[in-house]
Image 1 (cartoon, chains in turn brown, yellow):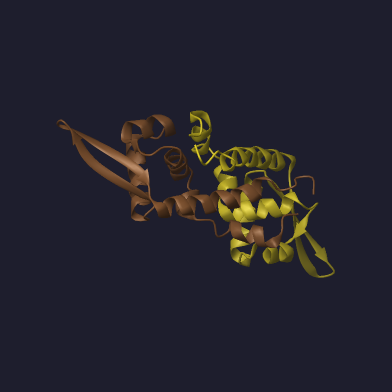
Image 2 (cartoon, rainbow over the protein chains, first blue to last red):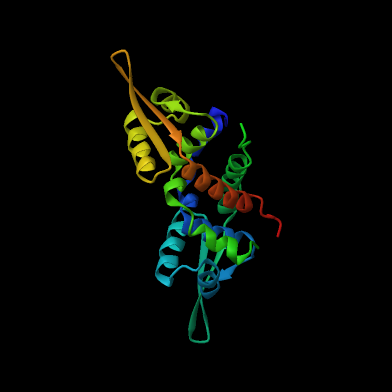
Length: 106
Length: 106
């Protein structure tokens, strides 16, 4: 069986990251310098409304930075991971890694 | 970056399993034939009330079987993974494994 410590860590997972839509956004941002709104919609498959809500939540948590600029008269929204967001995501992924590599024949 | 397919899978993760408390219960059951209520309380660190609620939810989903018996006059509740529960958990862990082993220097 998994050790007790690892199992208890599961009940303390960072829920800001653990939410599936936000996890999809963060994993997208992990691999790129920055991503604009249409790109995030395309990769995650989220609706624009959902994406917007979850990006705001990630921004409030300090995990993502959002920049709104204009390209000509067209607004452009760009998101990137903050240093804190990257660290928390790494910690989260580390816990998942231990979880998913557990010996399932135990 | 992670491939689009894997990222979209994240937004479709099995939410019955994904909830941290339920994940802790399932990971405990994965490693044992069966577990009684006090054992699950001890390993997961959940309150008795919370454990009860989440076990019912897992039973309703068909992922866990619950047996209530008596030892003398004392009720005893025992939980075990069903075949379906085991399969769904394996699928879930497989997705997590791909997620957490992503090349983070990409």
